[in-house]
Length: 152
Ligand SMILES: Cc1cc2nc3c(=O)[nH]c(=O)nc-3n(C[C@H](O)[C@H](O)[C@H](O)COP(=O)(O)OP(=O)(O)OC[C@H]3O[C@@H](n4cnc5c(N)ncnc54)[C@H](O)[C@@H]3O)c2cc1C
Image (tube, rainbow, N blue to C red):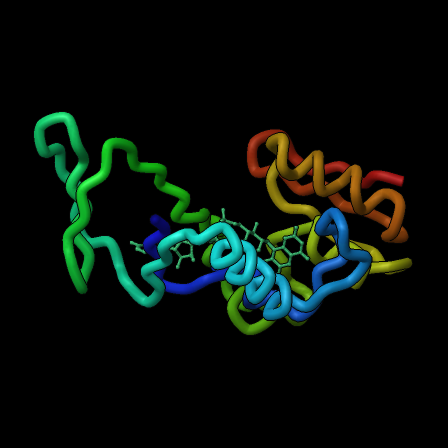
């Protein structure tokens, strides 16, 4: 059984998805519809529009309480997604989705031949930089810990 506030999650918010295996191009809403059809095809019970508010152990089972009911299950898989950690600096909110993005895989093609800055220096930043190297003109990698570097 799947319990979810919405089917598709963040994917449903994407205007276009170009990196989902099997589709050269699909809108986020269409992809969410495909997820729904797939679950129905396999006869999966889906509780849509329900929010999990509490989880507790009940003997050998797990009790999952939502805003609409309570379910017991032997196993519970939590796939509640992730949220980007924002910089919380002036202008970030104003330019979100207007030049400020949190996903190179999703948005790198929007920055073709322009100069971009990647903020932070962990694995994700280097991964984003590698993806952008094929697309952007110049990449500034700005890292709070060790200064900054201009690449290419
Ligand atoms: C605008 C936008 C465009 C994107 N474009 C692309 C793209 O082109 N290519 C790409 O690869 N990625 C893209 N992404 C990223 C991609 O959508 C995410 O990486 C992916 O959706 C993560 O999937 P997930 O299932 O881990 O989490 P999520 O999509 O966040 O799903 C989590 C689900 O859990 C539910 N949930 C959370 N808490 C509860 C609760 N307490 N009770 C019930 N349900 C709960 C949520 O409602 C949601 O349905 C984009 C993201 C955004 C926002």
